[in-house]
Amino acid sequence: MGTAERRARAKENLRRAILDAARELFVTEDFKAVSMRRIAEKIEYSPTTIYLHFKDKEAILRSLSEEGFALLSARLEKIDTPDPLARLREGGHAYLRFALAQPQYYKIMFELEDNRVDKEDEDSMAYRAFAFIRRCVTEGVAGGAVTDAVPEPLLSHVIWASVHGAASLALAGRLGMLPPEAHDSFFDALVEATLRGIRRDGGAG
Amino acid sequence: MGTAERRARAKENLRRAILDAARELFVTEDFKAVSMRRIAEKIEYSPTTIYLHFKDKEAILRSLSEEGFALLSARLEKIDTPDPLARLREGGHAYLRFALAQPQYYKIMFELEDNRVDKEDEDSMAYRAFAFIRRCVTEGVAGGAVTDAVPEPLLSHVIWASVHGAASLALAGRLGMLPPEAHDSFFDALVEATLRGIRRDGGAG
DNA sequence: CATACTGGTGAACACTGTTAAGTAAAAGGC
DNA sequence: GCCTTTTACTTAACAGTGTTCACCAGTATG
Image 1: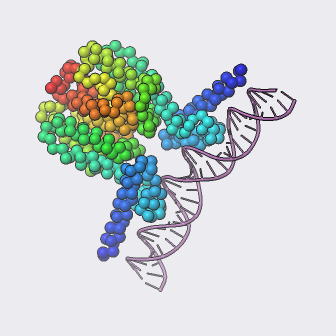
Image 2: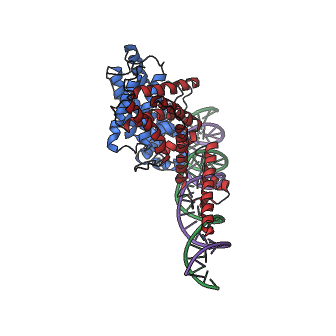
């Protein structure tokens, strides 16, 4: 039966159209500008139709959040620097560039209620982005460059927290005390301090 | 004229009542549960009355945000450990305890739109909390324990970012990969790594 | 005493997310 | 080809949201 397939395809298409419309709304305007009615208007369907494809509005935003993590991990995985610490450095800067370039994505990735990844959803995109850090740390520990005093995955979380903190402060407008031209130096200093903090030798070099 | 004073006092009282009602709503329930109508109901006034005391809803939330920073800086300023690095360590833990104990406060302190502290509003409570870090850093640099390779206030922002990142990840539910009993170890590891990252000697001690 | 100002309100506007009930069309069974 | 069931979709409505405007009573001031 080709009909069932065609129907499934149409369904998937509409689902994608909804996500596309929502993404365009919240990337070009604001995160608060995404309303069910505006999405519906954009896809030229009734608002209630959306509920046939997504449980509620948050489900749409969660999808976009996942999309954001996919974009982020794609950027991270492009980095092929052999040395784990140097790779972490590049990864940190790539992370911050992403957050600043895609603030709307970044916000829903971390400000959404109930991200709670209780279970081992190891194929989530967030997990995948995090895996970049974990690989660097594991290699770094194996090579002796990174401290083994803090067991994994604690150390990877420490790195993530530092970089996320910088991104979060910047997006929250809490870097106002720093002149804009100093932001890059700040990001640089943060990445370097973080690396020093996890080095085995304390990072005199 | 006593009448003008009495009127001013009544005005101030109502302003406080509004803030009290809003705080109780968003502390006991949720940040999203704070609505103008529910505040009005609590203070037994019409919703429109609130607009005679606050420009809009965000003005109320900004006041509460400021209140949150006041609570935080009060906690920090209690710490009187002489050694700057040890004081930073204690401050970091106090900061994290505050964020976990008052998640609603913490969220509006950093998730509110337009916190942009462009100008030198040096008497804001956020500035005051930040000054705690700056004092530690300045003393630390003077005493030789803290690196002088990164000029202030960059280094203080680095510290703030790290600790805020940990708090933010925790509140966003992004620590789900860690078992709950490991969270304290994580916070500990983060504070220690941050301190190592800013030490002059790289922190072999 | 008339005027102007103050504090407060009810009704309304233009939204929001979401649900229940209903409809037109396509698919499946005979 | 007809009948029934399922699918896709919509209209109307509910219960809220922030905010504004026109209005009104009471107080202070000329």
